[in-house]
Image (cartoon, rainbow, N blue to C red; front, top):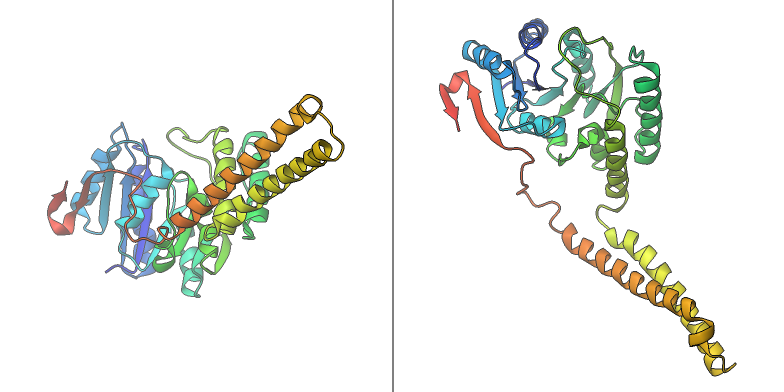
Length: 323
């Protein structure tokens, strides 16, 4: 079994595939320890898979995973992780904006005993207004809400111990929050500065709209980290507050009706509707919390549906194609 697995998701990167493979191979061979390259074709429509298939045919250390369509980066990474075999896993982008020459920095830190080593684009060269400022704000918010003091959640360039990674479910766009999710299990995390280089070939797949998706995922992570095993504490708090508010209004209306003989239907009709809404809303929130508690017992079930669909897996050493 290889000691290291390099997992790289690719989508329409035909201009970079060959160069990426050559540079990864050179860096890992210089390291001197066993390794494998797990290259995931995330539904490319160009010649990316054709080139990957040629590489896998001549190098038994290369595994190519082809997805049936473009599932997104998180799902492509999940497919790569599932088909990797190394004790340590290094994930990176396939557009060569992550320099393979930085991999030894991750290997050094992971060998010191850290569970996760995260890349930090300390000196970014992206557009100031469209990338750097939004990214800095988002990273600050993520660090505060998640309680994980790292500077760069957005980069895919990270190294993981396999046993830690296997505890983190991946779906949506949660790959950037793996350190936060792993911290819930007590994982040790550190950062290493990495180079930030411009894309030389191909077209970027990132846009400003990703910021909004990250915000919603951040809310999900915040909820998971605080209430993963006790959802009733979240929904129940609001539910009980709503019910107490509704009950208080009902009691006050009762005093008005029976002690002061007021016509509450005429004088306080909207207030009666508010009380009814608060009571029913509180009951609904409590019910949601109880249902959430029932679902918690299934959270650690070993059978989880994969967020991707495999077309084929190529491994030269097996002399076979898995459909």
